[in-house]
Image 1 (cartoon, rainbow, N blue to C red):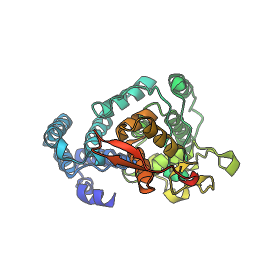
Image 2 (cartoon, rainbow, N blue to C red; image 1 turned 120 degrees about the vertical axis):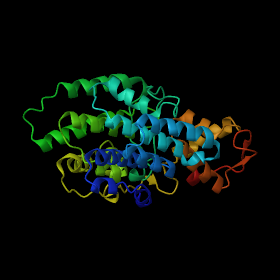
Image 3 (spheres, helix red, strand yellow; image 1 turned 180 degrees about the horizontal axis):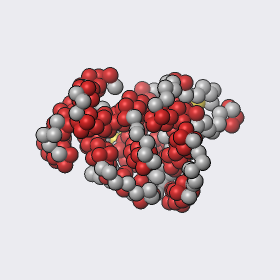
Image 4 (spheres, rainbow, N blue to C red; image 1 turned 180 degrees about the vertical axis):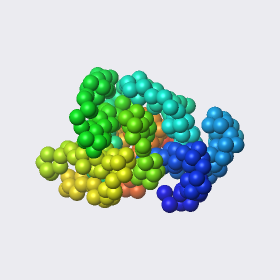
Length: 355
């Protein structure tokens, strides 16, 4: 993140005192910072293009057109594992949405934001997932939050939005209002209606919703602490009763109160990390279930690709590659031939502690 700030250097626009440029710079910082929730870093080309936009030399539509042309020409030479195209395009789209003075409080708006952010990047942009998912979380030492089942997503979204829409904020203090909004954002995030991109979608929706209340959002918080934002959402929705761990809004409330009330609460990721003996911190999964499933798919289809495993299991490609690397490092599997046309071979049966 420090290297990104060095490259972007948007602070110069804030110090110049030109309101329009300062506002654009702040929005760009938020948009770029939010890519960190998925470990993505936009390219230097995006940074320079963003500066052209802040300076008023090009419109946001021209920014998007430049990115489309850039990746048409250079896309094949860019390491797809780094996902710079996704980071660049989504940053520009977040900037566009946050610059608009429009908002509709509804599940349809939430879904539309996802579609606008990820159209052409994910095949399922703007589509409710029809499969169940789990995600190993660093803050949980590899465990996962239980997300809504595929067949209950629409009903869950409708319920949460209806309850929030009818809620009476008139007697709440500012801090209580912010905490209640944080709880609503936490609840819709837990539903995780999309295959990928849920946190960035929730963040954009949250900013737009807070603005509707008249709150001035501190863009620096998302720019510098987006990873904390995601981990706080995880902790707000995680339960492991046998280890005495229960959902806590403490961390996400800290973030939101800093975000709109200019409080100075400590935002340290390490304070949120759970320490439980049932989690395998070396493998990065709970009881090895993800590794087992990846290995089972390989046994069933020895030509399956990492991308196909990702789509089949509903987990991120980077997670799949991490599991595959672990299995390869343990000498359990080996890939022969190219990633696209090659095949897998089971070298040895995993021991119980490796599975």
